[in-house]
Length: 241
Image (cartoon, rainbow, N blue to C red; front, side):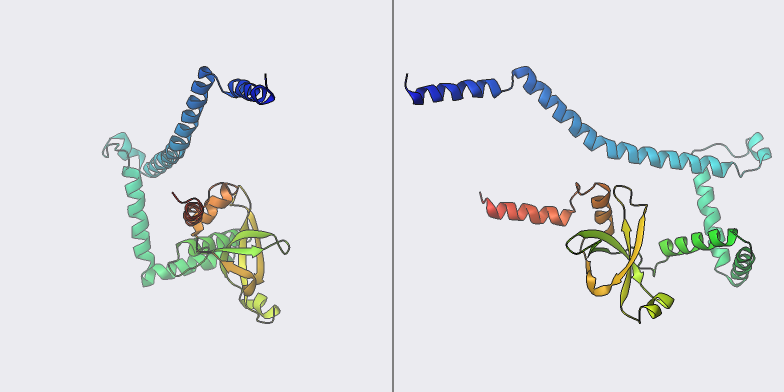
């Protein structure tokens, strides 16, 4: 037998040995389908479950504000969601009242009283600033994702623009254009640290804050849509049909 025939025979035997059996092929396909099903259903299921639990908790908590005499005589029948509707109505009424002159006076009075309380004043001030930042329509905080070199040249991280550095910080930095950047940790973006960097060292990204958060939380696995399209376009250009 010639060497070429021997090599061909060995190659055929190796291919047969490496080829999975029918049972192994079926198990591999079932595993693929299982993981695909989990990937599709898990995010939707967890999201709806958390929303449902939050809805039930708010409903029960709000219905607890109804006087026991009313509940005991069943003057208000239990309908799921009534508590949430009552809560929204109360918040709207409070908002309407506080936007007026009298309501604004009581809000300022309450702020003054709380500001004089030790410990409580610092917590209240922090929470108030946080909610004003989140719900303010004029606020631009955390509306842009940025890229910067940190902790040294050649290493890049994703951060979120918190705003321009003003006040004493800007004065101490000789009024140089500086930006406050929040750098989240992976995979928990609720923790992180704040750094102040020159504006020229920051590269603003086109991706949205949501896409940047997905990229951080997934440890770089979930690629933003724009990058996916660019990658697909390059692949098609490289391997045209």
